[in-house]
Length: 229
Image (cartoon, rainbow, N blue to C red; front, side, top):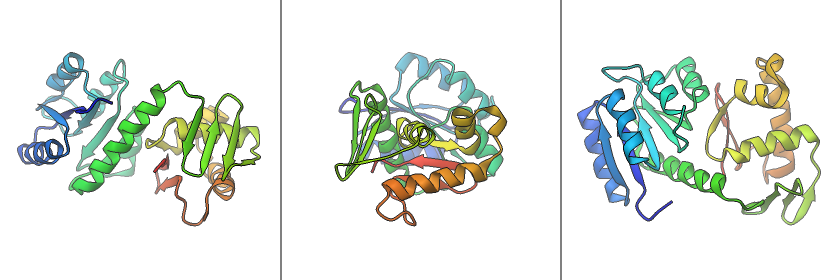
């Protein structure tokens, strides 16, 4: 991430664009705007922004379609900002490749925090280091070891695969269906209780207080997010 990351905002609401322009520029982001999906896709291709903020209610295209088209080639984070707040809409956007989803009206400080996480996660993903450190937690992707407070924690193969899927997507909300399909296969895609058991096991092993998790965060009704802090 350079000193002044470029943020593309795809949103047709004048007030939202003005709010984001003020907030983002005050926090040292360069901001470019598109008022519809077609312009947004064009600007994403020509400017290669570090992150995209995408509204789903666009005048010319369904935002989900814009997201799908962007994800055919755009690798950087995309955060959805939308008044649509149904569980189905959120899950669909995340499954279509969004990193995160915030409903309008949103708190500016929370949006900035989620943007920082998404941008930091992108750096981690592009970093070739095999050892990832998150405070008292260290993961060696080559040796396939996890340490908490410098002590090796034993994981089953499935627990390790689930854990590394989460950390490799640091800050990104992964839906129940996505995780189940990635770790256990298509036939398990509706076994959310099964996943809940494994997440509880992981929390017991890595969290200081499993009842107040710092690393593995539940997104109610949607899925889980790894929070590197």
